[in-house]
Amino acid sequence: MAPQDYARFGEMKMVMHLIYEFKKGIRSLVLCTLCPTCAEMVKERLGNQGIAYITQELGNRNVNLFFGEQACLDAVSNFVHKRLNELSPEEDFMLGAMLGYDITKQSRRFCERKQKMQALLT
Image 1 (cartoon, rainbow, N blue to C red):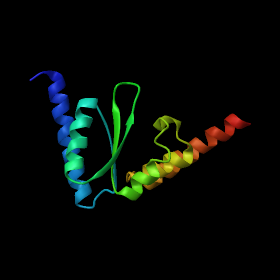
Image 2 (cartoon, rainbow, N blue to C red):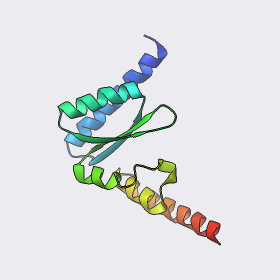
Image 3 (spheres, rainbow, N blue to C red):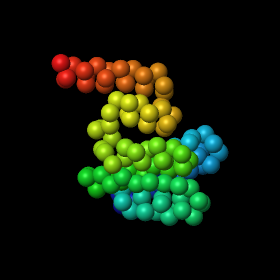
């Protein structure tokens, strides 16, 4: 097996676990950054299982694949047209919270990003 095949196998195994967690109600929204080949395989699997998803093409030949509850995807679709590093502090906070990141760390990150933005404006 070629090295890139091992990497793809690892990606797919991780995604299958995230699908399992979504179906068990552990996660409401999932974000995976995948190669286009893996993204296509995952989209097919999600479609077969009736799981909603949206994609975001990245300039580096990767794809951000969001899947989960439709209400979460509807919220994410309001800002997925931007690169994730271009999100406002509010959008970044909301996405992190929706993905289940530690809320205290997200709050600190929000405050730091907000302070940096305010410093740039003064």
